[in-house]
Image 1 (spheres, rainbow, N blue to C red):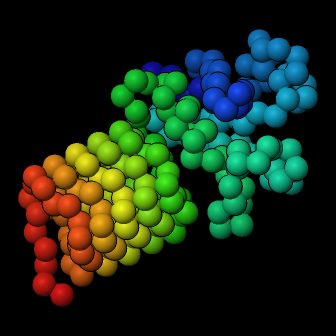
Image 2 (cartoon, rainbow, N blue to C red; image 1 turned 90 degrees about the vertical axis):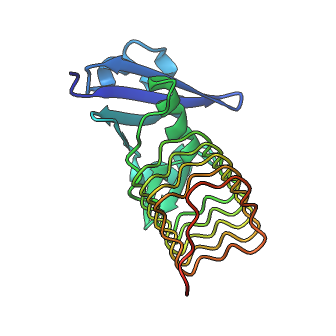
Length: 208
């Protein structure tokens, strides 16, 4: 089993391009195989390290982040610059066609409005208080995820797997939950006003 991957990501013409070298932690070794603009930092790029089992960590240069990385490449969370979700998803897509399980423990209270999280494996993710208004979560794997007090208004959760998820106090107003799996989910005080519950599996709403 590999100990890790050195990964480089850059955005070209609106699309993320990912490079990786198996079994290498040193980004210098990987960059030496790429073109000189990347190698010498003349072209912006984001460094990642992937350690197994499937944890993706970015390596953002904090003191120059605001000026070095193009707009939208990085976001600030809890006073620290982090790689944007689209770049993380690109890395995950590069590694596997089936979307590996990401380490998403830092998404509490995140602004994920209109985010495309379709098909992503977010099992056990900590998304408490996150703003997921209008987010695309079609076919997302959210088993046992913490979605307490999350804003899921107008979110598309068609065919999403929410079995065992904690949706206490979540706002699901006008959400599309067609054919979603809610087996064992905690919906205590969740607001399901105008939500489309067609074909939902295991729906159980606690009184509150």
